[in-house]
Amino acid sequence: MPLALYALTVGAFGIGVTEFVIMGLLLQVSADLGVSIPTAGLLMTGYALGVFVGAPILTIATRRLPRKTTLLVLMAIFTLGNAVAAIAPSYGLLLAARIITALAHGTFFGVGSLVAVSLVPPQRKASAIAIMFTGLTLATLLGVPFGSWLGLAYGWRATFWAVAAIGLLALVVLAVLVPRDDSVAEPVALREEFAVLARPQVQMGLLMTVLGFGGVFAVFTYIQPILTELAGFSKEAVSPILLVFGAGLVGGNLVGGRWADKALAPALLGTLAILTLVMAASAFGFHDRIGAVVAAFALGAAAFATVAPLQMRVLQQAGGAGQGLASSLNIAAFNLGNAFGAWLGGAVIAHGPGLSAVPLVAAVVPLSALALAAVSLSVERRQLQAA
Image (cartoon, rainbow, N blue to C red; front, top):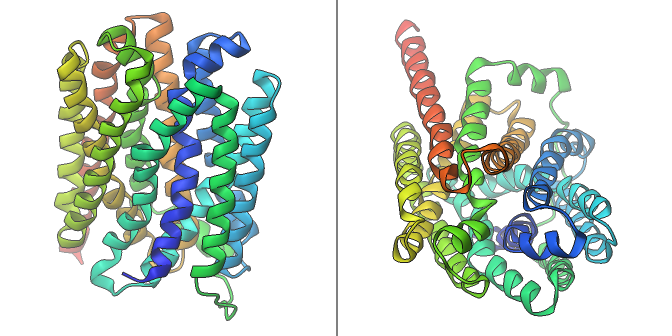
């Protein structure tokens, strides 16, 4: 794989840390700022909604810029947002800083996906996307546990300063390693890009992404209280268990990419089916310490095995004309699923049936994505047969 692809991985790592690290800091933030745990969980929801809003806006705003320039601008926004979060004196300003940071997220991964697939031969496209997203998984494997430990030892603000420093490092690496291409072709007319979004198969692909990840984040957002209150671990034990979760993410992400390169449709159905089963089983596993560790690994692996198949499905159905906007919107769809999942988990905790029921309720969401994927592929087969 080209060296430039790993520069994208570094950028993805920085963004992944800031997105996920708040889940290891919920108890500290809620205590320091005087808000409830579900309210602190809205910091995840706010970030995800920021991605959803920012992805199409910044993708359109930067469509005439070289892709490398776009990536550098987005990483600068990301770094500034984390610095503001580190000094935020109130919950409201912290939430605003999270939203500012999130604006860059969707377009970075959308543009980054297009850069990644342009660097490799056609038969390696899903694997290239998976390698870029390895930065996201490594963020969970290494960055989130370290950020959680740092927040526990030195306060949650220290974690955000550390993430801002990662952003600066990513900015330098992207500037050095990603090849510059100023010979940008005239962008596709906006009406053509939006016409692609009107295709039912593209819309179904985006909705699959929302539902596929909605269930994951209903659980993952509240992983700290799940591990401490259900499994009986101490706060100090959460970081090592997040390492296990992150190891699952890395492995699942790479396996999902390889599977999607070989056979996209079976990979799409298979990964969503596995995710549903793992989430349903984790409802029982999280009540036991050993079971909780196993469930954390399995949930991470099953969750990120779906990433490359879901992203490739949307790119495949969008075709060449609308891939830029469709790619960014699919990243937005991942984060809309995150926002929905964080809200769903909070609602189950606050209004019943309670924290212990979160994984089982959440399993229904990827099950819906699996049903939609089956319908989408069936419709596609009938259309091909008719043609």
